[in-house]
Amino acid sequence: EKAYVAAMKSDLRNLATYEESFAADSAGAYFSGTASGTTAVQGFLPSQNVTVTATAGAGPPSSWSASATHTLTTKTCSFSAAGLLTCT
Image (cartoon, rainbow, N blue to C red; front, side, top):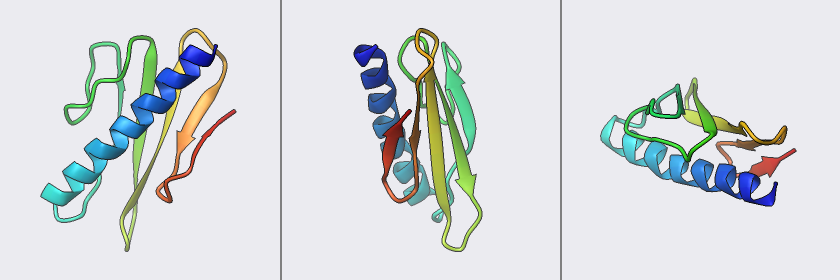
């Protein structure tokens, strides 16, 4: 189970990089969407068995949050715009 949680955390950290890069190229706007399996969102593709959902927040200032699930565990990880990564 620790490996599944580690994969979700890693994917959320990588998504943060994608979100900030996208915002830098898009006048500060963030993207929303769900990525899993072979379905990417804005070029981001999570690890095998992980589903990541990004949600852009209305501003100002604009923000985003995300959550990740893994098919082999009931735990869920969340990432907030403040940079807080939690798993429950």
